[in-house]
Length: 413
Image (cartoon, rainbow, N blue to C red; front, side, top):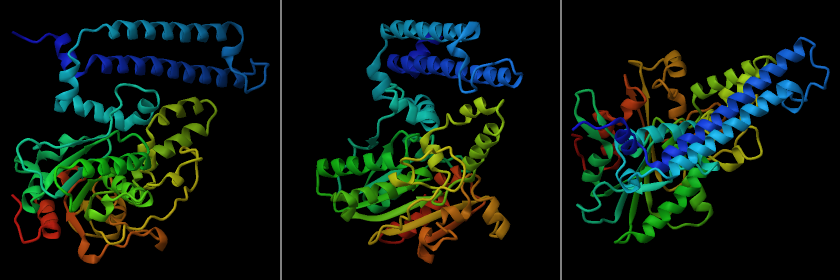
């Protein structure tokens, strides 16, 4: 018997998550109304038809204001009605929350990456809660070595298992755990929040995990892809400041394509904000560009500490000064940088990188010595003809990780 569209929907998203989508739709409609009203006001003032002070909004007076107030009121009423209807939706919440399908989790991960800070601040049920996933919890004996893998922006823990160029399933975590005799753990988190906020949560969560582990934890290895590496750096700094115990057990920290010095694509989005905001008629549209999350704007310059963003407008133009955060002392730190080029060159290093992260950023290089991350030459690896996502599925990357981390020579599968 075929599955109806409604049954498919309930298996993809839970009832509470459908309510979350309805809330987003309502908020989006209200936001678009504000944008349209702002453009209306700009044009009206430009034509000299508005005798009031420029800062006054059309919503406050006249027939035009009555129309916009009516739209907002109707939208809120409709949103409340849909919310009440979905509150009574008879769905199997347990299946949706305990056994997420790859499709459902991918949808939530992207949504959280794009606007996860708004979801968390508004209490939307679509916001992901940070958690540690252990895929082989019931099949393997607990060891004293924990291997934690942290995904990047708009991604999720299931995406560590991917296909390589040969079409074979590949998982760095599985390969490393077998070689190291470690228990692999995968972090799931809301990548749209500030990096330092996720770092603070990870610092506490990892301490709770270590305290509750069935056997004493003697060694911890962390591998972070893209934003995941920045979250790890933030967590270590915050854990050390709070004098938590787990950093003393942290032996190795590996970065895969992490934008330590920022990512140019977010900077491109920032320029769009500036261009739209430079014209009074297009200025209301700048709000569309500013819907992107705090996690995304943190990537503009690789901001990993609270002091880098607190008390500042993250969409403001100009240089964003941030505090240096060196690599943690007494911890072996390694970095893998990808490039789509066949070999290094000044042009390829600056413009290409892995398609998302410039090579110099992934290597921690910076003109300012205080902001430079000093990886040892033998702790740096450049993977040629390798894109950002291919870093997750490359056997060559696995072999490099094994060469660095394994106690004896081992070959990646």
